[in-house]
Length: 270
Image 1: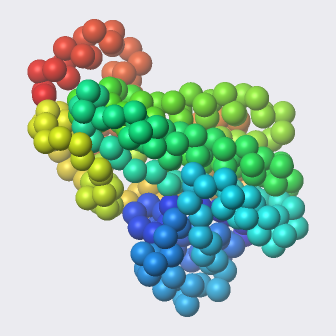
Image 2: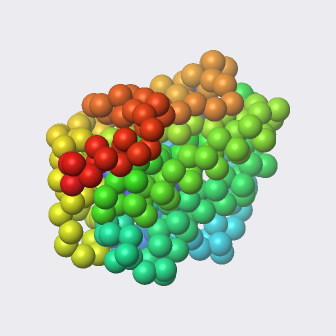
């Protein structure tokens, strides 16, 4: 079972880990990064894995999207098995502190880009023998309007609902769409968050909900498991997978408790 896999945002964090672990398993991996100059760890992997190919790709650049599509179309004879939309970043700040251009950039990267990339590669994914698989890396932050992190949370919530629609609309093409929703893991995400203002309410709320960070290999193993399920034709059109301590509980809370009660609870923690 060797698949052709495209992964975005591979210079660090989950993307770098996915690229290495999937290449280690023998898959043909196309790992992309916005800035090759700052992706030495990823470039070093190409010396170890001949089946790992690094491509420059800023996910909000339509010209680079066209280029990556043409490369994979040519190299894979018009098909792609798996697309992992991992690229994204966090924006921290009160809603009234974040200006329009910052909100727009957050949504362009975290929401619009993965949807546009998915649309562009649908024709190749539809040629996969077992049916194409799209894995969108979301976040359990998408369940709530976290204080100080509202723009990020809403960008991931929008990705979730668009992913559901994409799955329903393409169910007759054997396409599967999977949402992976990690909690805090030991990646560089926290250090790369763009901060607007110094409000501490988010930090207090987050530390109360998520007291520790976990091993990112848990997420990588989950992704590998989903790819295997798709190969065995045991994966349906859509699946949402929260991962991390308290993740399932928080999903249930977000679905069953009235929003007024959630706001009151979050206000006490902030």
